[in-house]
Length: 450
Image (cartoon, rainbow, N blue to C red; front, side, top):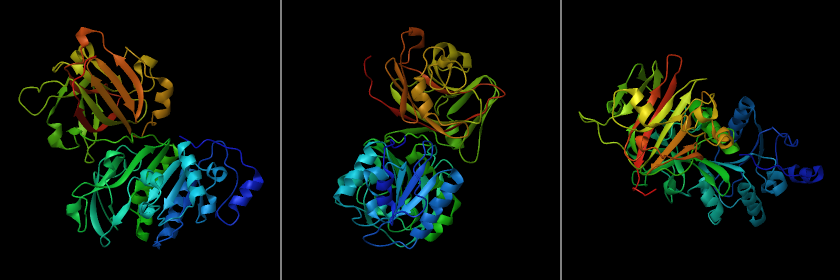
């Protein structure tokens, strides 16, 4: 999602930009992505700010977006902000904007602008409720700089997709005044047992994202130290957050609570699944399942000697990735069977392949109902990048979200294919199709009538 273009005269632009923005001040082209880094401080000033600015500039040069930097709050006018796809608050502290500047920034976010908060961005504007909601949480305290283990909770978001499930790094680890988990989507959290000084009772988010009042927001608590901005993993983390904020990458940033894993990347969790038919899935060291051969299906049978009962009313989430023109799907609503054709004939497939006919392409209920193609196309990440499905079954209603965007709403009327009590499976389609899956999780929902 891009900030809407607005008309600004050259005189007005010059008045805003002279003396407040370093870097080029050319008008934003129709297809040009531009990011503003704002690092004004009215409290503690981090000596890593120059390294942070340099890192974002280098990321922009490599990834194809233009970066301007300023410490002048006068840049926060409607006309000037309209030039930018996202504003990065880089270790800002204290009250840095006046009422008029706050109003301009609120309108910018509500019209689709992006926000990236780094480290002390959470130590900013305590009396401005809109900003507190946008950042997600306010700073409370911190212990000494020390190593800690970061648990990566979402491995599909571009800010965390390249990270291991546990990320060990040294930084100044903030405690926050509130937990953002209920209203934001937590990407990574701190293992408080891995360091001293954590005060959030074991649930300690450290990076998160959300859609907020019409805009996109990403925050990371890392970035206190100069060394952070030379760390390739942290730089990729920042780049992914910026890509999300400017709308160049899609992700499901709705809050996620109450899910339990069906497959969490471990061989132990994989033991609850059975292969039906030919082909197989391989498990990599990073916890990714990749299909080969087929036509077969890996289905969730549970941990007992006999298959567990099927699911009736639930939200299923999983992350998937294709390398190119690869075919696969997620099956729901079928009876326990080691014959993959039982799922084809008695259940429903949510397609992954993006290259077939509308009723047989990404987000379609295969051969029954196409996804909303325009919404699907806007939400879909390209081959080589991760996507997230939510497949929600309630009664005979089946809905599909792709990266947080609802793209299909289907109601079953065929009693042979009843969705009320069925199993879940991942298809391995054929020898030339290699599709990867991560983090299959489920939340069982109250049973509702149709």
